[in-house]
Amino acid sequence: MAMRSDRPGARRLRDQIRFLLDTARALSREPDLDALFARLHELIAEQFPSWTFFIALEGDGAGMDVPFYVEDGKRFQQAIRLPIGETITGEVFRSGQPMLVRTRDEFDRLRTMVIGPGDTARAGSAIYAPLRAGDRTLGVISAQSEEPNAYDERDLELLVAVGEQTAIAVVNAWRMLEIEQQRREMELLVQIGRGLASDEFSLQQMCRRIHGQLSTLIDAHVFYVALLSDDGENLHPEYCIDGSTEQRIDVVPVKKTFAESVLSSRRPIVIGDLPSDRRVRKYDPFGDKATAARSVIMLPLQIGERPIGIVSAQSPTVNAYDESALRLLRSITDQLALAINNVQLYRQTEQRADRDALTDLYNRRYAMRRLTDELDRATRRGTRVCLLMLDLDNFKAINDTYGHPIGDLALQCIADALRKSCRASDIICRYGGDEFVVVFPDLIEAETAPMVTRLRDELLRHTIPVPGGSFALEASIGVAVSETGMDAGALMLAADRALYRDKERARRKR
Image (cartoon, rainbow, N blue to C red):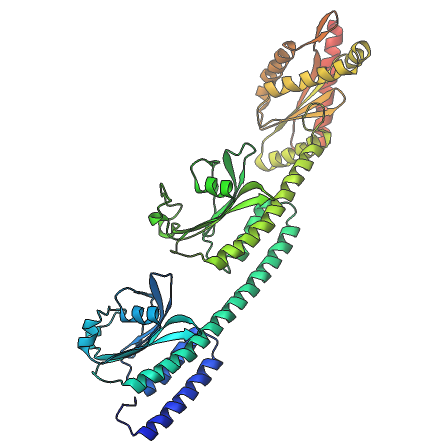
């Protein structure tokens, strides 16, 4: 039964001392705030009339969060926000001074506001005490009764003492949560670091791994990574996931976007509510409207002072990201930027290794690898692969007569003619010396003759200037089409035989 103020003084003092000791033990043993508040409510209910009991904690400046609220014996689990202005709780929080409200008239005079779903007209009196830790007020604790004059000054003093103990417990719990959060963040960064080192230059796999681990700490319903084009005008999305579905997104112009601001300032942007943010010129919900982004955090990816792209996490929850989320994402983007730089260097190195330095066409090694891949794909799909081999006629004579610089120019002209004659999907390679090959994926046999004619016409348009005049380029061409079960070596041999048949025809004409 709740203790009333008309108890004998000595007995009441003993009860209060025992209550404070019990409260101190409960607050010192329970690290979980929700469980701590529930135990505190049990102790308060034994000591005071408590038709309503709540704890409010500091929020974003304009309001307070109410993590624990009980009314008429019922715990309300839904989130409650309490405005500070024109409320008794707000006044106690701002001033740091306790307050005793004895009657309903005083409630009305103090202009209190409803903070719970119940009928507060039943409240006849209340006590409010600040949660103070040193010079800082963290929140307010309050008990209310249906009866007027249910509390006196001693009750208020007792609740103030409980409030001070509770504030210390809250600070300790926050510190423990912060330490635990930092531990989890460090563990996550270590895991990501190991993952980045083992992803074998797969940027998509890196991003997939980061999102999976990041989602254990923050709400990253959308996770998006895009790299800046060489001219700085566009972003090329490398990875985007919405919920559990990976998305394909077209190239995005940078101008007049948040990405432009992030890249130019090299500072992150945090948006708590997209539709209401004044910086948002246009808001188009992305993906499922039920989970459309409300909170956005976007950070620059950069190597030193050089921006290379952006990273963004988005949540359908308002104000989903705080300083700890920003700190975590900063650390992740630092690692990711280094990994992306390594990927780009690897790609450049790989491209140089696969390219012929003179013509900038793919080289023999790349040609054989791609030919094997295309033959495997054609076998699975029941299609065919066409292979063209080209050999520049009289190449040795050109070098002997005019010198190697003219011979190199002739090879570059052949490369240019091939680029102009072939499709973008065709794989053009310098096989070696004056030999070139072209792999035509999905080219049907009937299309080979027009393609060869187009190539010969293009070659005729190329003449090489030399002292005393110029000479036209002539080449022999052989084409072969794959048959079922044919490997790369067999198709190369078939194209080579076709090439020499064409060369023999050219000799007979001469």
